[in-house]
Image (tube, rainbow, N blue to C red):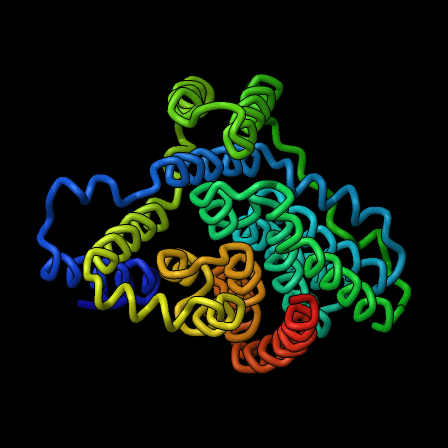
Length: 373
């Protein structure tokens, strides 16, 4: 029983998606039309990108980058900027959740080594905001971007107009907050040195994963079809490091499938589809923000996309909706869990600090969004 409870806590969104999919299947009995529900291109891309990013992480690329930059800092202001900006820009390529998994433990270690434990909470909160908002700037930065960009054939211009103004505004706000922070001399010699670990066949593995990333980007931008690239990624990974198959978040993939089934079934009930379309249409921005606060932005993007006409506005809404509550972006839960593990008695204080800063950013960016639209 405890195992089941722990699984539900760990995979709440996945379990909820199963309930919705199974419940809708009692209304629309399974048939051949179910096979047309999933967006197989998005699922294939998500699978490939998760495996590629795991490959880079296994090679130590991101932690090495962090150590190189941190060796150049001289005070707490430059240290906080280095850590937060690392999260902002890395999330554009390696996704917000992988960024936080990589750099939050690194931040806790650096804070302890440099005597800055009191700053850890604020810096990690700002890192989380940076990762959630930096990831919105690229089609591969987070799952909701990849899904909406891919499934609805958005042009790059449409995508950039919908997200870049808010990513830039977020960057400026982050820089302002970090700039007015304390500036204390830092004993840089205390910053931990990167442990030198020999990675077998490093050049071969790095080249292989870079090649796979390029192929996936060509699929994202609709230069190559996804099926041959999926096959190539599987075969290359089998050849260079088959352990990466264990690093894929299969529950996230199945969550997507379950939501596809639920949406497909709901759209086959004319009365329900018409009602939802009337409620959401024309309110994509606000609905995306509000729905994300309750069910998080990835499932909000999948659910609402079936009933809206303005996909760019929905894209903006679910990305801004990643701010706010702790569950608005599942990546934020990663930061909370990692911080709570490092500072067990400060979990409550983290939630208060997290909510305060998130509401500040959400208020500013939502006001900007209504002004621009």
